[in-house]
Amino acid sequence: MVRENELREGEVAIELPSTADAGLVFIGRIRTPWTSRLETPRQGRADGPICRLEIFEPFVPAIKGVDFYSNLEVLYWLDKSRRDIVLQSPKNNEKTRGTFSLRSPVRPNPIGTSIVKLVAIEGNAILVRGLDCIDHTPLIDIKPDRCEFTPLAAPQAGDFQTE
Image (tube, rainbow, N blue to C red; front, side):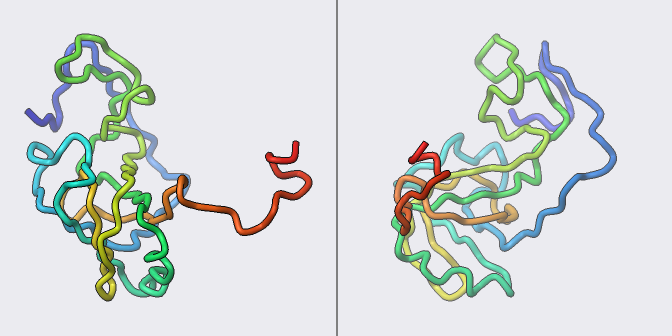
């Protein structure tokens, strides 16, 4: 069962700071077939359903060149997640662990990330497979998958490759 306000045995919640250090700009919304955490898969699958990354103006021109890559890293804001639990007791696991040692969506800054398969680009929408978030999740950023990104310039003095 999905939890909203209750804690499991061993879990600890804290009071969050009243002010934020930084602001985020949502660049779009993610459209998926899932409307609740209960039905959302625990992990995205490359053969999962096609989902849409709907990009807002004025960010639509930033899509240019995305079709060069077959895999993308998608970062999104898990706006339905709790942010106050620092010790968690994962379901079906009796060990309590710190939030930073888990892939749980319950985090101080609930940023989700998935490596997805690019299916197509349709106007302001990028169609992908491999997401694991609720419909209408705010989109933070899109990047080429690190494994596919090849630097265009040769290493220079001071780069980690030349040290």
